[in-house]
Length: 243
Image 1 (cartoon, rainbow, N blue to C red):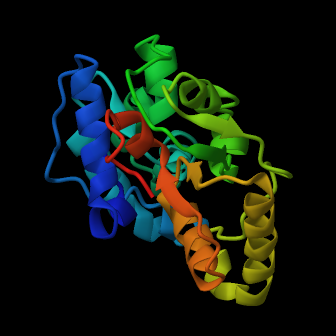
Image 2 (cartoon, helix red, strand yellow):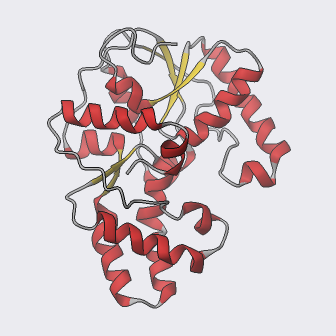
């Protein structure tokens, strides 16, 4: 599952997931019928409008052993909010399909460590990197230190600590639109901490957060690049994903 933002703005992230999983021997399919997971609607209270998207999700992804996506926020929606939408709809068949499909949906680092049992994915990325744990992956999914463990196993990579790492970057989906000033202030704090870390690259598991952080860093001419975790893990040469 590539997710909307990756499909529209960061197709390279989805391609990186495919390269990485194929390198690890996983049989990959990309269902072209996939659409939005419904997160924007659910998070803004439009639960009834989310029903067709949830129905499409279970129809498109229901037959697979696992559904892997490079987004903790989208996985959080599927695993924790699809059931709410299905129950509200009153459609017992949809609720049953959600109950069967949702547990098979994994954030990338979860799938690598918990399903494949792999820590060293054979990546090479010779740069100083700081890791930003996104809110949904940290608090809703509880991915814990899985991304850090994967990064620590990347050859050539120096993982530096990010001050106040668990603080929100301020994106928060529609929060950034409805509360722009607060969002920018939070993001500015995050960028200051990233610069303090001395990292060349900041990495996270959600491109939505990286869009917010990367935009602020660009305006500040911080000289730090925002890169998705999948792209680093898929990298096997100095040129791929280099700042």
